[in-house]
Image 1 (cartoon, rainbow, N blue to C red):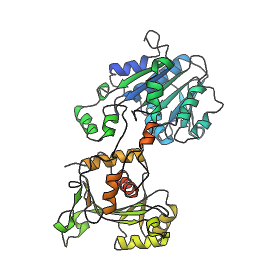
Image 2 (cartoon, rainbow, N blue to C red):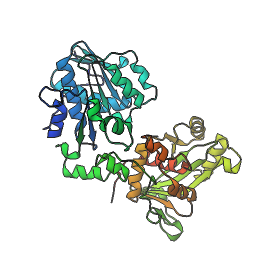
Image 3 (cartoon, rainbow, N blue to C red):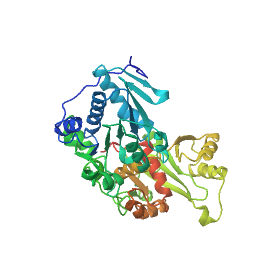
Image 4 (cartoon, rainbow, N blue to C red):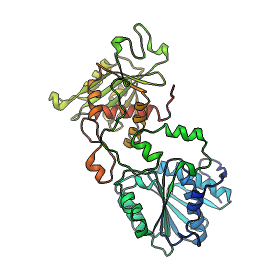
Length: 431
């Protein structure tokens, strides 16, 4: 009866629930005091146990109250929803021996007599997928990352009598629509709001909590660890220090000493590339010792300032000279630069697509900067250092609920983010 795409599905091993998790699980039941709310939102710190409780609650509610109805299950991307929602959901169903079938090609799950339609909400036109649907309820994972249009359409589609909407997320900016239009208006719109902290996840040890706390810095620490809806303001990387995040190769500082062979010392070489034709093109030459990224030098071609654009072939020639002909270096390249990547591969370079998640990439880079695990050569990276001090959060976007940096003089910053988020994580080894 059950479809276990990709192999056997093991049962879910439930751990004791905290008081907050029990509130999330049973809020819709008569006598809870919140059973008349149409919507429920669980927000707060990462790893606080809200997702497991919400999935369990949604399954119980929908299977207890409805037969032969359609439901919405939405996540930011198809990959995220499979990992964060469907995998634990299928295991829970196995635990309780509830028949289910996952029809991957149709993006739907049959559970008992109900049908659960799976949607990704990462595109501005994602709401179009919901057009014409009549649903008895919805589950929205990481709803703060959804376009507002999708959320409005999702709520509007839930028109069956007794329908409810289950949502969870980590906090974002203070002006985000989830904060201003949902949390701040909870009583007015019939929303039951539950705020989670790491203390609400009884499975986390003190050591794990400390590890997560070290894994974020600045505004991301306040949002993801403290669970606060606060906005990013001012410098994107206020933790940057011109002394501790730089080095002087001429003074004998850095990963190499004169005459040493880099790879004999276990150093790996990367080159981070932010490709541009009208905009500047940036290369960063990086040596990695397993703890620190040492940025040895930069290439920065601003076609507007130089009044001449370069071709892919010319950039490839410049990159070859920049790396002294080294074909063993791994190139981390802007994923949109298709023609340039083809040119580089044709010349024998190893190329990897950069992971281009701006917000998460900034969070990763911020932690590495704060841990002094990024060091730039003072005299050979002038554009990177100049951009670092001028890299600011967009104030106008903040007032509209968006958290993003100004798109001005940020090309070396983009290359640095590509390197950090593609080749490491916030959990990079510390000494």
